[in-house]
Structure formats: C-alpha cells, structure tokens
Image 1 (cartoon, rainbow, N blue to C red):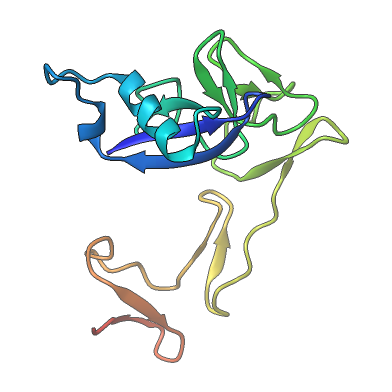
Image 2 (image 1 turned 180 degrees about the vertical axis):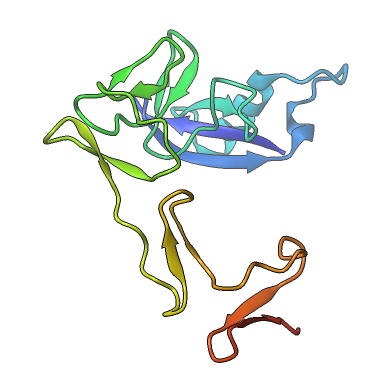
Length: 167
C-alpha cells in the first residue's frame, strides 16, 4: 500500500491516506509518485496538495502524521516542536538544550527549569514486591518463570507465586 499526506498552504499535514500500489504504476510497470498525486487529486480536488510518505520511514525522513510539517526545501516531514527551547538538528530531529541523562530511569523535560526531571517510580503493583534502584523496577519476591517471555503468567499475591494464564 502507498501512503500520501495532504498538505495545506502552510505545509502542515492535514490528512494521511492509503491507496493501492497499483495506482502508482505507469504503463511500463514503474512506480510514479505523480500518478499517486494525480489519483489523490481526483478524489479530493485538484486544488489539494499531496506528498507521498513511507510507513517504514524510507521516504522523507519519517512517516507523515497529522499536524506535522512538510519541509519542501529539504523534502522531509518534521514533527511539531515539542518545547519552545528545543532546536532542530541537521537530521531534522528536535534536540533539548540539555542532553537527556544516560540512564535507564525515565525523565521528562521541564521547560520552566530547562532541565530533565526524574519521574517518580510507578505505583507498587503488589504489597510483596520491592523497589530496585538498580533496574528502576518493582521486583517480585519470587523470580519470573524461565519461559515468562513466551508464556503468559500472572502474579498471585495470595500464594506468592506465578500462575499460568489459561485461555
């Protein structure tokens, strides 16, 4: 499937649609973005502006989303500026004025202080679980089953054990 973004007069993405790849094929079987644009205009009006986008990010930096900007000079889609203090780098990614700490701990940007604030731990899931500063996670009193990544288990607080989830 091919994806096309409808761009307004301010180069802001208004809509993203999916069309069949066959629409892009010319008489010789070659893909043509212009054929997709023509098809979109036939559906939504000749006065609309369309640009192809790629769901896997192989085209124009990243997949277009509603509210994103299309930079026609550099031919890329750019996300909205997350905070006024952030700047766009040469790769068209927004960068904070202060680097995110290199840590497994979760942080959020504080625009008022121009710094990263450590988020508090999530709520304790069970009374028997303890907090690990090293992994920044709640840990059960009994190790996870060895096949936990492939088999569904749930914690049983009453028996202090892992119960296999039955379908």
